[in-house]
Image 1 (cartoon, rainbow, N blue to C red):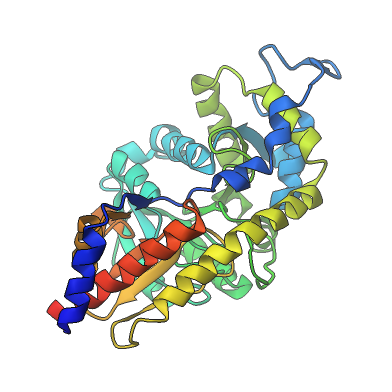
Image 2 (spheres, rainbow, N blue to C red):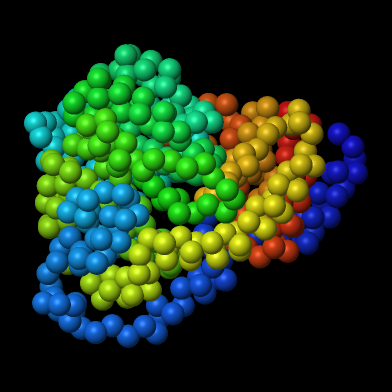
Length: 400
């Protein structure tokens, strides 16, 4: 390694930087796109429903219809909740843990879940909360590695489900093919008629480049006769306001009954005023998609900045994903240096998502996978942060 790069790194450290790219958050300009929600007047009565009062535990009708359009599911199979798809996902897992029929998961000896990796750290934390053992299997370009899935199911008992992000997977950006999802249904259904297919469609409408079309997951579930085993969630967390949007779930049969039961215990009623505000802002799913084109124009340049920086790394150091949507880039080093890169970046004043966060239990066995979140900071800060990342990666690689 050249002394020049070490000298340059010391100069970076002397700048006293403080840049945080740990989470995939919208920037303020993206949030501004939905500012009309802040001043929108809503009539208190929506037909016979007083939006200010208790009631409508599954959401108001036009919000459920909007969710049904987005998820391509029947409106009577859709509920509209609050805040995030993660919250609905957590409630679904809780309901299965407490009340699943014929056996609640809490009464199963070491229930297990399939977790494609790289994956979403909050999914892993949620499953760990319940003591559900996580089995990591790799993602491939078209979705889940089906051979690894078969192997995991053949060698494990009490696997109760799988959790997937089927479009712009967090953090590596895979867009599952229809064939991959069909075979996923086939394999899981054969393993157990109680196997849960849980799809977190957090980035359903978050394309920023042309992206291959997918048959909606719920439609594929209908074709495979697995709607009784399938739950699909999405939200407006990165469409309007973080924590101030809507969430949607499509479910059927027992799963629909369970989510109604658990929410009946947890939620007095949803925020119907906010639901009406959103359905005035978005008349239909096309309005949502048009709104997201504005997000794409703000997000795309930041990914291009990140790519330009990562191109400076020699191919023998590592490789990175080039997603067509979502909020993340995954960097994979050829040496086990992920934790060292994070450490060096921190020394220089740039915070990354911790090494290991992309795997269950925070354990990346190869110590070579990192998540980069370029959206929240401004473009100048991003250029600086990526320069730090590239420099730290070069140093870590040379010292390994």
